[in-house]
Image (cartoon, rainbow, N blue to C red; front, side, top):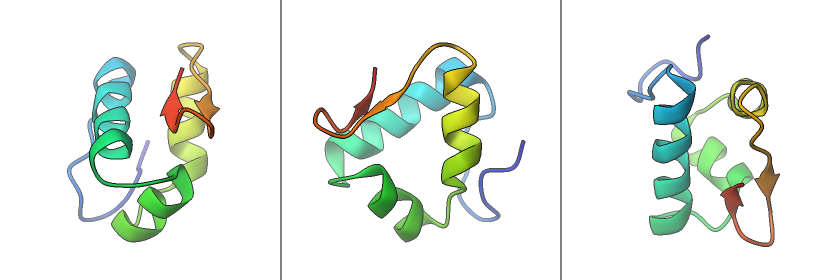
Length: 64
């Protein structure tokens, strides 16, 4: 699954979860802003993390 063309995002779902949640915690106020700024495919990230039962919670700004 391709999330973007120039940022090194892990393809392993657990590693992806860790990387995305870290970026959301440290740099971005929302998943939309993270994806726009880094050129990430939001739907691909959400689908990958949904497969391991994680959903984005906008109030927490984390996948939970």
